[in-house]
Structure formats: structure tokens, C-alpha cells
Image (cartoon, rainbow, N blue to C red; front, side, top):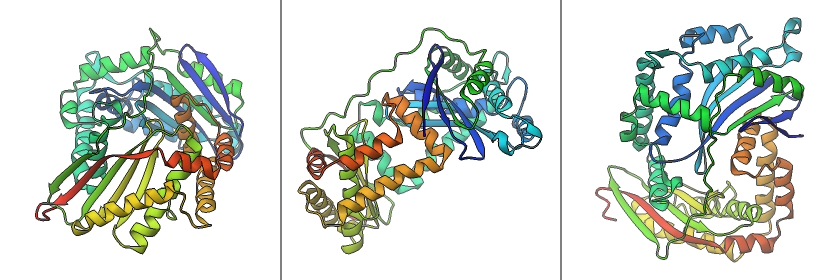
Length: 420
């Protein structure tokens, strides 16, 4: 697919992906902000509060009725973490012109709705409605408090906080920072975001570029612009001199072993394949050996965080198998670093990654998320670029990338009576 990027206004960029493949057209508008202490909570609330009502459509019922008149168009608030940046705004979709009876065109009306919700919120006494803010705060608090109920999520959360302590990458939404948010403080943050944050727009569908540009310019005509924010650079994780080890006891019946590794490889395609071989697929060494062959883990997988130079492992183990599972995970990493592979493993890993990237082209939402991630990171590369790079990554490059992976932090969640 061809990707065209244009500047619609100062600090406002459109990524235009023309295609007649889908029956809908998709729009999105995302403000890009740095992750800072306390900002995650306000920024994740903004979209939810804005979606509750606007000047023209006072509540969600009126918004739903207006969208029904647009043949079921959708406008959804989104909050996403992209490394040490967060993206807040809306995604929208409408039926493509070719499938609307009577020659109706829905793009302009859908874009107008997106702009209405983004720029003209429902207010009282000059700020956000207090009931909307409190209800969305309660929803966010429930989400944060429920994190401990999923012990796998809890272990991954605790690992990242300890692994990246002192870095924006380790920050997460916290209960105490939500409680202090007021309609006044949230409204002030909204105004700050509109005036200073870079805005990334996206369209995927069959409408011509000029029409999309005109629709979005009109929808965002009231967007105020002040001194634009300069996003700070994202630095790789500084590796520790000694491995950090944390053990936490809770009332659990299954242990959770989470491990964080520093990774200094600059060869991203090679490292993607190295991680896939290690634990990034159902044919990986962690899955096939630690889980299936040795039955040391209920689950075992790894993830590569390319922007921060990190690899993380998530696994569930019996308390008594902690040491054996730990040792075996390290042995499987060593096997990848030594390129001790069976003949099928590298072709299988390459096929897994190839299929994953190709599947993006079958979903507008995945295309939008991929394109946004590239824009936020400053890469601006296409799917085809990654596919080509992955095919060209040699065994020597993959092994060299894997050898830069070094253990940094170990977190183990054990039972109160386990004695580990």
C-alpha cells in the first residue's frame, strides 16, 4: 500500500493510506505527549470524558443517535502507550461511499463528529462536567485496583516498575494520582494538550487525498495552536552492573517468574528474529522446551521492547520449580546466542514474523496502530520495509544481536507459605 504524509497545519500531520480493500473508511486523531509522573492518569481520562458529551450532543445517548443517522458510524476514545510517549484522541469509522445507498458521503459528517467531540466538550461552570469526570475516575480506579487480581499482569507490572525505575518507561497509572484529579485540573490539561501537543491524523479508505484533507481541516478548524511541545528523546535502558532480584509473597497458588534483560543490539530486524526464536512464538525455545518438553512452566514467552533495548520474559511456575525454570530459561537464551538451532527453527521464526507483519494489511485498526507507532518513533517506515529487512537478516546478524542480551532484573511472585 502507498502511504502519503502531508502537513495540514502547524504540528498537524496526516498519514493517508488509500485503498478500496475495506467496506469502511477509518479516521483517527491522536495527540502525542511525553509520559511523565501524573500525566498518564489525566491523559487516559481525557478521551473517556470527552466521549461523554459535547456542546451539540450533551450526552452519550445523543451522540449514539447522531451516529446512527450516519449508518452506524463509530467514534471511540483511545489511549495508547508507545514507548515513553502516550497517544490520546479518537478513532472513527464510517461506511465507505461505494456501499452507501443514494450516493451519500459520510466521511465529512464523521470527521465533523470527531472534531466536535475533540474540541467542543460538554461543560458546566466553564470546566468539564463534574459527574462525567467522577464517573470516569471511578472506572479508571476500578481498572487500576483490579490489576492485582490478574497475577500474570501483576508480575509483569512489578517487573517493569523495578526494571525501569527512574525511567519514564517504568511509569504506570497509579491510584493516588487519579484521586486528586478535578474537573478544573482535567480541563486545564485538555486546553494545554490542544495548544501544544503534536497531532497525528490517519485515514485509510477509498476517498481521494484532497477530500480527506478538506474534511479534516474543516472538522479541526477551531483547534487552537500555541507554542508546540518538543518531545524528549527516548533513551535505551541503562544496563545494571549487577542483576536485581525481587521476591514478593502473596496469597497465590502458582508462582510468577518475570525476567528483564538489557539488549544493546541496534539491528532491529535481527533482534526481532532472535526474540522470536527465544520466546516470541509457539514454536520458540521457551514454549517448546521449558513449557512443553520439560513442563516447568504453565506458560513462558518473551517480548522485545525495541525502543528501550529490553527483552522481557513472562512465565508461570510451581513454587518448587522456580530454580529449575529459571536455569532452563537462561539455557534457552544461551542456545539462541550460540545459534544452537534445529534446521526448522530459523525458517519457522522468519515465517512467523513475516505472517504477523503481512496480517496488518488485513485490518484497518492494525494498520492505523502500526502507522501511529512509526510516526511517534520517528521511523516512518512501511510494512514492506520491515518485510524486506527481515528476509535479509542473516544468521550472523541474528546471533550477534542475541549475544547483546544480558540479564538485568528478576521478579518472582511466590506464595506466603512456599518458603522460596
